[in-house]
Length: 115
Image (cartoon, rainbow, N blue to C red; front, side, top):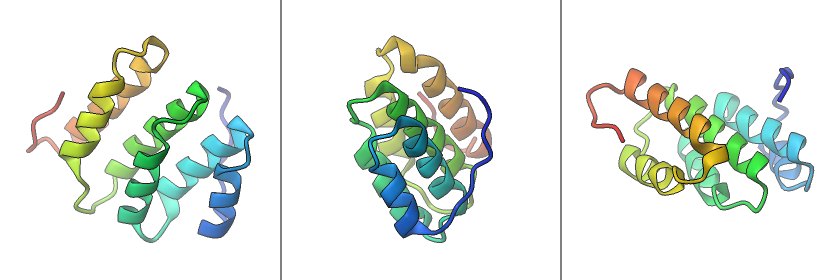
């Protein structure tokens, strides 16, 4: 995907975009949520619910968004996120995104075990 600036216009708008059916809009929406939404725990739960999307592009975006989210300082459910990423790691097209996400989790939260 080419770089595109992420704009966040609030949760209601982001959810609308995230459920639009347009892969690019969905990816931008979930990354925007991860970066800017005021309730990271809500975002975590929303992203985890989207990991099984039928579109690999959206799954890739959700994985990238989870990586973004874990860079924020909040008590995220590391074990659950790692478990869900690990379960998806056999999907070849997602492996690089999962590896990047795990690198971020391990870098920003080195005190916890990784994959």
